Image 1 (cartoon, protein in one colour):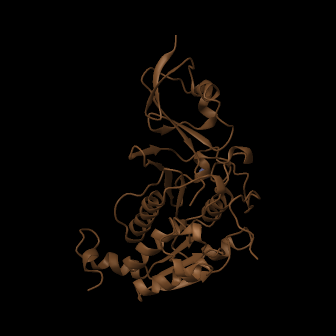
Image 2 (cartoon, rainbow over the protein chains, first blue to last red):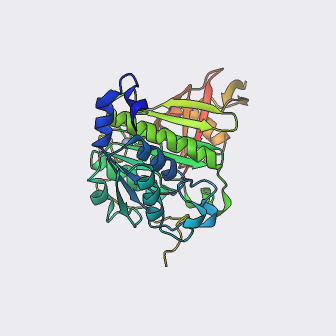
Image 3 (cartoon, rainbow over the protein chains, first blue to last red):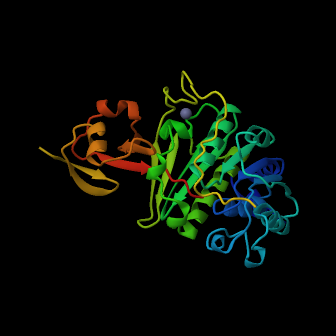
Amino acid sequence: MRYSRHILLEGFGKEGQQKLLQSKVLLIGAGGLGSPNALYLAAAGVGTIGIADADTVSLSNLQRQVIHFTQDIGKPKVESAAEKIRQINPDVKVVTYDQFISQANASEIISDYDFIIDCTDSFASKYLVNDACVMAHKPFCAGGVVKYGAQVMTHVPGSACYRCIFPEPPAENDVETCATVGVLGSVVGIMGSIQATEAIKYLTGIGELLTNKLLIVDALSMNFQSIAFNQNKECSLCGEHPTITELEEYSFQPCRKIKV
Amino acid sequence: MPIKIQINNADALTEASNVQQLAQELNLPERGVAIAVNNQIAPRASWSDTSLNEGDRITVIKAAFGG
Ligand SMILES: [Zn+2]
């Protein structure tokens, strides 16, 4: 049967699979990180997978966004991803949001899900996902990739958040734009697979999450380093005296295509 | 006297005696960068109180935005 290799796993079993089939995971972004997440979570039998993205598939996406095929160029990414998920596993219900996450829609979209995965490609969206999830007491896994390097962390209510390490995004002048920064496709694959694994662990209750830890990967040396950090009492979002009390999106969106 | 530390897995010599001075020496931007000392993040507010010792393993982490 479909899930026999999960059910054989110690600590996973039929119960773990049942939990997955009853779970709802939201992928914010259907690009490089979203692709492996969608593929593995679909195959794993996560009962409901939501995908939010307003972008369409373009040729330069295909080097790393492995859920989209050449024939999908021009199609909305959520539609292309949903088609593949249904082909991989008809047990999965797919919910698509043909929109970018924004301060207007974030709280409402995430409210329906058990676990959220940040697969976005800009600081504005990453901070928005962090802030919305922390405010709504939702667990999530944040990931970021540049060139040959990547970072990933998980938050559950009460654990440290992304702002506890990086209180504010870098200044615009210090950020290279998407058009000039390369990324090795397979590194995005590693990171997306780690995020999917974190989601599965959270949903089934197995193992130890990347909470209060930032995993840093350098693919060139293949060095994986897990860095500990504490919930920061001075964090402007989750600290003792928060100054961020409502959602506000940073306006700097260097990677976003204009939607026509 | 400079001390010998590691920065992102490479040997380095520094005149800095705390993390704040090291950040200045490395010309790190004000935002979007975190520093870990021996695998533990040093919050920015504690940089000037976090002293550097011979053999410390420093990790400079730039927030990665891509996905
Ligand atoms: Zn925080």
